[in-house]
Image (cartoon, rainbow, N blue to C red):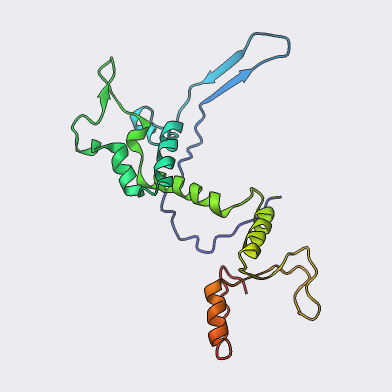
Length: 203
């Protein structure tokens, strides 16, 4: 169901404003079983600029996204990718081409910005972080992966009963990690100091 969300700092402004304009332009297509005729109704009512002014708000082509993703997987920096895409276009006087009517025209890729590349980069990074579309299954796979690498100290899912005498809540979620370096340092200094790192408001 819907959960109400209260902003902690409503006075903060988003760095990037929403692009939604509630445009009334719509295309309705209807088909009926056993009838080959396709009905369509196009409502041409826009409340925003069209043409080149609107181009930068449209979706980047699939070919461009795949090209950017391929370079990112090869560890090419986002800044260098941006230079490759534009190929010095900002230094040219003929930034826009001309169509048959003599009007200037542009392509969506001409407006690719660094944040577009960063967004694709985050999606690629997520592939190695999120091991399953379901968060619960992804967590369980991470647990098995950490256990196989001998980096798991303990794990208790919310569906598991807490260990007897632990004092944990019945629905507690516990995930304890320790790398080989941390284990070595704990064995070296554990009698003198014990530190617990809690992140993201967890304890």
